[in-house]
Structures are given as C-alpha cells and as structure tokens.
Length: 423
Image (cartoon, one colour):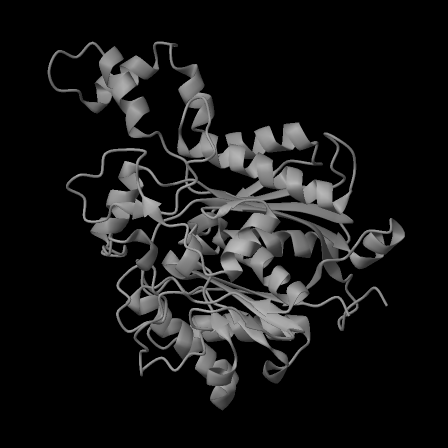
C-alpha cells in the first residue's frame, strides 16, 4: 500500500548525504558518532584572543576560494547533494526530477567585505554609512552584491543540480532543516512532485556570529579541552557550541521509489510545526508549543506516544533548552518519558544551527537502519531535575520502529519529525 492512514502518498527517503565537524559522508560520520568522538576544536579561522568562547565544530577540511558563510554553505551543500543523489540513483547529472527546498542561515555582508568597502570609500578618518553606500555604488563590488543575496545559494544549487521550479530557501532559526523537510514532504503529499531534494546547510562560524551568540550568554565557555564543552542534559551544562555542517535528503513518494526499484532507507511518517513567539530566544515557560509540536507530529504520523522507541533530542546543552525539552517530553509521554532513549548528537558535532534539523534527521534514519543509538557524551553529572535516558557516553543497540527528531529554534520555531523503519 502506497498511501498513509489519511490516504496521502507515503513519503520515503532514498538518498542521504551528510557533512559535519566529524567528517564528510555517511560512513565517516556514523563511525565517529557511534564511537562517541567529538568534532569540537579550537577556532583557527580568525583571531579568538580575548573572546570568552574560542571553540566550535568547524569544517576547516573544506575550503572555498573566497571564504564567506554563504560561499562555504554552498560548497557543503554541493558535497552532500552529490552523496544523496548518487545514493538515490535518481535523475541524471544536472537533472534532478523535482524541486529544491533549502534551509539556509541569514545572509549578510561580513567584516572582510565591509572593510573592503570602507577602504574604497575615500573617507580619511571615520567611515559612515553614506561613505559605504557611495563605495558600493561605484560599480566595483558587484560580486559582493551577488554573493550576499539570500537567494544566491539556492539559485546556484538549482542551476548546478537541475532541480525543477524556483528553489525555496527558508530560514526558521534552528528549526530550519526540519522546516525544509516538512516542505518537501507536503509537496509530495499534495501530488505536486514525485521527488524532492531537501538540504540544510550552515557555515556561520565567523567572528560576528560568535560574538552575537556570546552576548546572549548562549555559548559554552568550557574551552579546554574543546571536546568536553557540549554537555546536553548534564547538570553542569552551560551553553551550546556553534558548529557547521550540511545534510541532504532525497525524498520520494513510495510509489515512485518502487516504480524505479529504488532502495528505501526510511519513512518520513509525520511532521509537526508550532511557532509560539513567546520571546526572541526563550521557550514558553509552560512548554505548550513544544508539547503541541510533538503531539502534532504523532497525529500526523498516525501513531501513539507508546509507539515511539527513540528521540533524537534537540539537546543543545543550554540550561533553558534542555529543561524545556524534558518538560515537553514528560508531558507527551508521561511516566514512560524516562524510559525512552533520548540522546543528543550535538554533544559530539556541536549545534549546526540552520542545518541541524536535516543533519539530525539523517542520523535518526541511520539509527533506525543500524539498530544503534548514538550516545550523549560528556554526561558525567546527572541532573536530578532531568531524569532523561540520554544514552550516556556509550552507544546502545536498540530496535527502533518509530523515532522523533526534535528541532526547537530561537523565536519559538519548533519542528518535530517522526521517522520510521521500512518494514
């Protein structure tokens, strides 16, 4: 049967590509993740002397000719798309038979480009906004203009891989990757396409972004050793670690995958999305949006809370986020909440921000396929207020039929995905 409990096309995953601070490709990432390896390292890309946080999950093993967040985000997206499309065996080179849904961080001109404009402004001492506008209007900086348009990354990817229609780029904070997957699922369910290419990518580790998050007191300052910094659900957690990464998924209707003899890797059974707008950074203290998001995903999937075998937690390691995720899980799953394994990939890869929802959905599919749950490392001091089975420090074998992957972002952007096994 190719339809779900509501008569909609069943949406499946037929290809995946991933790149994180642990390395490039599914094989390297899965090996490191299940071995409890950390990809957090000291930042070498820009000077960090005098900063409270000097570490991140960077991908310095990937380079671009003219470094910037959008350029590096685009390059990572290209690499993971190549892996995903190759595994799916779909379409042909430069001819993907469906639309592109892209999760992308906010794009803005960075310090290097601002300094270049300032140097060209002709101002003798201080440089004001009018000076920068005058320099920009000289016609010498068209590449800056094109590179720092929000749509530039999506358009470049659509041109290279031949996706159909206009690319859809979205930025819903740390839920963006989950949002992009939901958009792809909904397009297939509506019958608008048989296949969709979904990508989340983020390379925002630059000086300005790091300082901004630091001013919000959101980042871990446990710089030495870097591998010990990300501590989700632990009593001594004190902030998240910025990271870079990308994940790509080829989504198809089950009927389409069967018709072309494609291998099915997993099923996207349900999606839930709830925005609360309570605060720019904090979650609503009653947890209602998070609770509603998880319940909505379960209803969409047509399964009950007792059917869930594993939760891939948002698990950033900030005191607020981990507490609210537990509030949500305990309300949805009741007394069973402490018995459901709920581990955090971010303990090893850091928080890849816009890309996190896509990357962690891929890891969830791999958990289901391999019957192995990645651990939450650095879990040394349990928090009695959070009685979570976070799969502490060592991976665990487990049969998983249905799993939830949570993404809870700043500004009340919440997305939950229910992913299931093939049989």
